[in-house]
Image (cartoon, rainbow, N blue to C red):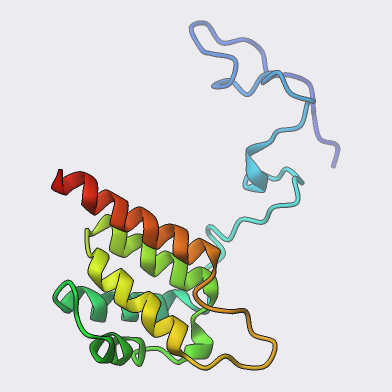
Length: 149
């Protein structure tokens, strides 16, 4: 099957991007690979597969949301027990911390980072919390300070 790569005919009143015309780039479609382009990125949308940690992140967030802000380390540890440690990646912990930030639960985020720092690290596993975690925690605390002023 031969693909027609000629530009679409102009549509009155439509912008260049809306009719799929030249976007000023190199002729590639762009869009992060979700429309058939080969930009190196893969989209998981519509494939019916959930990422392994997604359900575990949801369970942990559900437990953390039910705790009062500033819950103790032991309560945070129990909430993390809702998921096996191997199910949560460093990226999943970043998601949890940024969600706590958006929900204005900076004290819980702080306790979570302390729990992560106290957890024993497996051989070859990355150190937790990492730089992104500290940045998310700092942003949560800064947001709280701005709201207080």
